[in-house]
Image (spheres, rainbow, N blue to C red):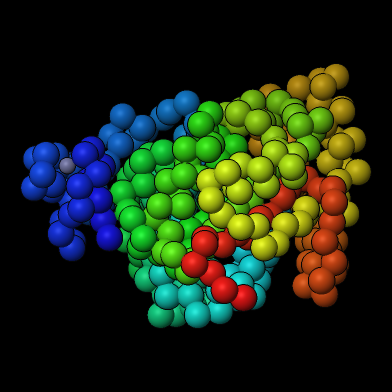
Length: 292
Ligand SMILES: [Zn+2]
């Protein structure tokens, strides 16, 4: 069910205008804009990064590997997936992959950047909403909510998780990825406007506090962690000119090598291994109605 962005009253199907309080969003490029103040730039994301991400997301080893883990998690824990919302969907590369794996799924992509959403519209059939992750305009609406490297951009991450909980169906759940290990904090986290990197305990505690039951958690980017740590130490001595110098701008050959390392790690995780340390953390959690 949709709810009003302002007064939280239930809305009729397919309209955003609220009969209870009269609030009505502007629609730009076919996208209802629920949080216009965040449309171009905001405290949580450096807008020009989307232009870089748009070029990188399809092929860069890190994005490719993360996408495979997300699809595995959905397939394993939610094989009957019928509805999915990506909170902070960016340019919708993950939504496109989910649509390819689950062709009948109903998709919604929420994102603050209108520019990113307009790129996403060209990639897959989903409903796109310009919105604030701290005000998700749904109740009991999706089998799964995803937020992939999103909540670390938000000061009040507990509020985002509470909103995801409400928007999730009783028998549904969430899949999250976040950057891990506060000790790896670097210039790149600052440029990306991260508010924090997580410890496993911190993330699990927050997910449980929102009402979810954690059913799977693993670190990833584990095998490349030593390389990542060395790169971050070097940066502390001499910060790069911008965030993308930190391992994102790499040639095709190196991308292939690092992708090969990720494939090994991916196979280990698929075989059931769970890692305690790694550059990122993946959590799958279910709402209370879930029965195994
Ligand atoms: Zn209203």
